[in-house]
Structures are given as C-alpha cells and as structure tokens.
Image (cartoon, rainbow, N blue to C red; front, side):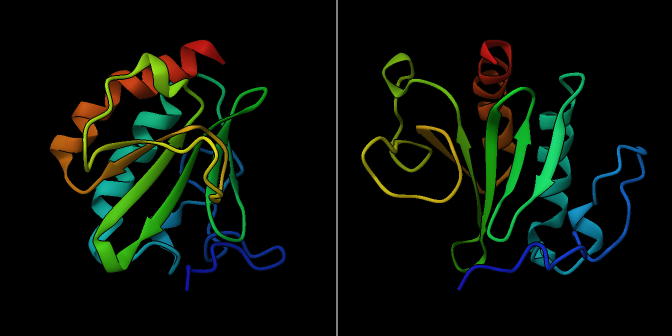
Length: 138
C-alpha cells in the first residue's frame, strides 16, 4: 500500500515549507519513509531549483509543475527507492536497466513517460541532466 501523502487540508503533516512557497515539506511529516528523507530532500531541492515550481501533494504522489506537471515523485519504501516520472520522451534517452524505464502504455501513478529510479545520491546525480531537460522543455 502506498503512503497517504495528503489528507484533506493536511498536506505533508501540516507543516509549511521553510521557503515560504505555501507548500508542505514532506520530510517533516510522516509521508516520507525515514530512511529516504535525506535523499528526498536532495531530490526536492533539485526539482525546485528551476524558478517558479509549484509542488502539489496528492494522495499517492507529489507533483512538481510549472504550467503542466513536469515530474511526479512516488516513494517505494519496500524497494528502498524513490521513483520520479518525468515528462520526457523515452526515445530521446538511452534507457538503463534498473535506472530508467519507458512507461508509455503502462498504467502508473503520476504523469510522465520516463521513470527514473533513485536509490542513492549517485543516482540523483545521474538523473540531474534528465530533470534539467524535463524542466527546460516545460
């Protein structure tokens, strides 16, 4: 079962983000598994570094958007991973087993056709160019 990221009006445990954006900081609430909080904090920083990015906590994932959803973040605590679905064409990316996956035609939570699996800081560094491309295209 996926963690409940937001109850009606509660957001991520009800604590505002420290950046004053009006969103909620997931690492402060119970939505992010404890062992993924550090990695998620780095990922959140990478995803919000692109100027005006709206962060919306939904029931099963966190959406990062500008005019449209650019990235969706889903936690997989049993696998020790954070999945990021990016709004990128998988044909323009060299897919790597266990790291990136073409999600076209596969039902999944969130938006985006490219799934990026992040389990370490090294994976996050590898994902940075993909994140940049997704936000530049939005």
